[in-house]
Image (cartoon, rainbow, N blue to C red; front, side, top):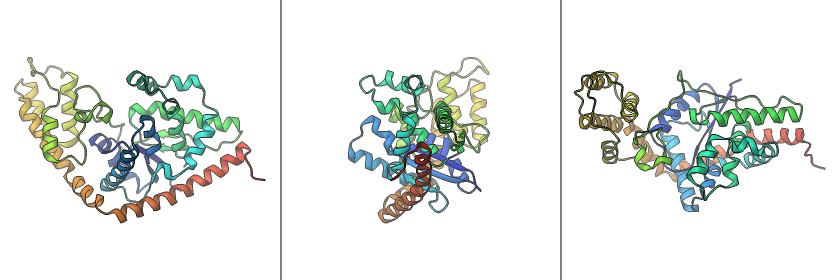
Length: 332
């Protein structure tokens, strides 16, 4: 019997290179070897209070781009989180056994509080519990996550094990981080500081659907410096990030060429960025074309969402029936 893999992406609109190289390329491989559930996390996005039109449009965009990246609804289960209400029910049960102190210590919660002090809602506090419900509802053992999500995965194990102890049953298996690569991939952004992510602003990301000219403008504005002054000197973070991006999208000999120029203090960042932009355009071209074709086929998207809803609920209903029995919730 195949092991179960679960992963989701928040419905915050367009996917970017960080999503693709950090996870989606692995997803395409995983679906041949594992029982895969890939969901669009629209409930999670409610913590930021999107408008109804934005929420629906973003869900559609992510669904389109999942499919364009190669996720096959015949091989995997692709569903919208809110289409499987059993997730919210398990979230409720797990919340009853989650403690305020451990939730307040979550690194992501602390970051959100600092960034948005006027929007410290209960959904942000219990975000790790909903993540745990997403994973445990399908009794997954493997979860493809980035390094920034590893604490949440540890908390999912905590909540699952706590449930098992409270109800004296080894029901939930322990989920662990998983990647086909030798290590979890972190794709840097264009701001010179951290990972590629929309939370840092649109200028930090290269979206899979970005037109070539948009990609060129974003890359040319990427943070750099005045260039090296000593041969073979270490690269500052902003420059290392650009080289790491080139490592992702460019040919090895292209990367080696610019590494050599940098080490010889002969690099021209204008030329470097132009090459990086063109390699990004080439890497995303097939996906961009599929995005345009799939987005225009409303009937196909409706069919895929319907199939995902049925398959997702079939798995989730079995778990909820078992959980209710273990908790002691029974019909008369």
